[in-house]
Image (cartoon, rainbow, N blue to C red; front, side, top):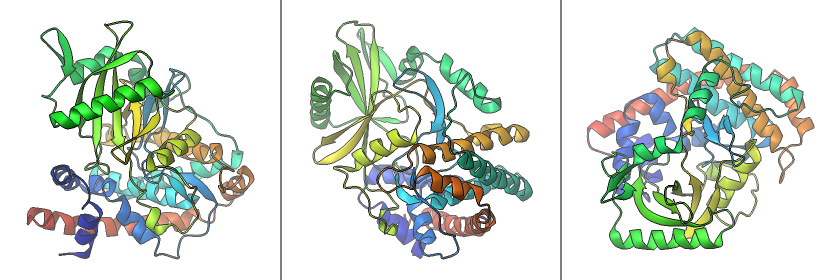
Length: 399
């Protein structure tokens, strides 16, 4: 068995086997999805190179790629476009986040069959726009009123979605009672005993946690399949109904949190988080302009979980759908670069992270940009080689 395939199976060995089988199926779809599902391989390789110049320590989401930006409703009930996945979040060199993102641009353009010079232009634009935004030393954000181009249209559509839209997609009425929709291919039935334990746990969380929605009861729950990298972890959705208004419902997601994939490759002291879920949530609150509604943590059966509201406004840009709008992608990449810089500025100076002045100096120094571009271009070839080895093993039934 190829060494890369061994690394993948070793990384996923403690996850739910039936879900890992689905994860491997997703990863075999294309090289970009393979890249999304193998964050651990990327950092294992990056940690062994000496070619990336030193950069300030910052809080990073850890898995920055084109589809980890999206829309969501903040706890102030306004809709934003921002980084939206923090499962791998950690204190690390700022450049690590940039290399991960730039490599994703080359891979995404590859599967879209867009010529390399276009990918290079976009990757260069991302790094230049990031540097300019960082050098200004001020964090910005994007909301529907300020968004432009594709992101503007994307946010307007997201803002117009109502809660009844997500309920219509996820639930169904049975005997005059609303329940979770089991015909959804992403929903799986939970063992009845476990379901009772989970629903009792969430009921207690609602009653005693100040982050919870007051005066709600749990009606139903399912196991949910979502994402790529996180597939195989435990993930549940709960249907809640208001005790004050029987026609008002909420969908609450409870997602298992585990150690960051970067942890084995980082020799930088990290805060003593109580749980992995606390790490994810606290870093997310620092990096985003406004955190999502009902963002919280819990511990169930000695495992930590992130809790947050499922929203009709939460969505990610699918780059495969905008292949024919190449010129419009300029604005999207520029926005993503600004948001990346803003997230680092916003969280600067916290628990050993570089202060704003250090980040500004890094932004004003452009010498590192070509090195990152060169590494990302070379590493794209490595990802494609690893993907070929994985697909061969997958088709042979070895994973």
